[in-house]
Length: 272
Image (cartoon, rainbow, N blue to C red; front, side):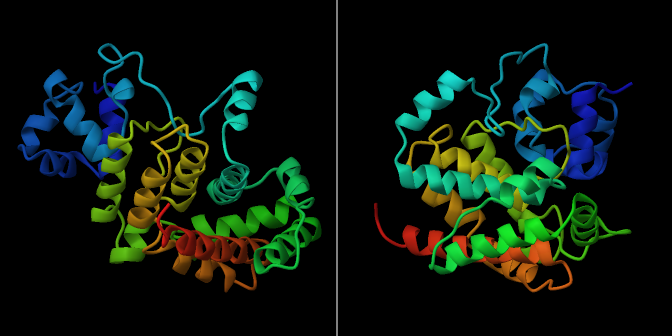
């Protein structure tokens, strides 16, 4: 019987054969495993995105989690005090997009979104429109929108993955590039879903953590990650989401995302 870590790695890459090809070894070799061999742990982590602490917890018990980082109140305040106000605002924007795009918002989340403030700028007006959309909807209605857009019967109306937007297929090179970037930055998944790592919500979550300096080394890290994994496609995804007029709440989310990504592109086009 295969151990959990190996099962998750096989599922993540699309089967035993896919894992064997990614590792450059024979399929019978992988089929014979009941756990990931010690000498293969790092390679399997790179190709699957499954953290080494999951693949072999007996060998790597102390892996850190950098997505959805949990800090106590004192740590959070100390960290926030050291971060520029603009970066805190950027992190909040990325965090909101990640939250709304990863799972159906709860009643409490909708209440908080309904209290968003705005100004006369395009992004500020988009915030006000999103707040109004949140006040005008219900958890049940948003649940239907989310299901139709991102789940569907067989497939949702939009596929929020870098691989799909850049190649027309899932689990292609853009996903491998994201997974390699996660490994390079020591990022390990802490959610219990198995959404591919190139999901727009996960990429936004990484950017939020980078803005708060809990991942990476500041501006250059953020710029490189954004330009490699978000700039080539995120604007198109948000524009497509904004065009979903029969899904009013998520159309408003799309407008916010499109404008925010445009601002980020312009900001990163200048040197620090």
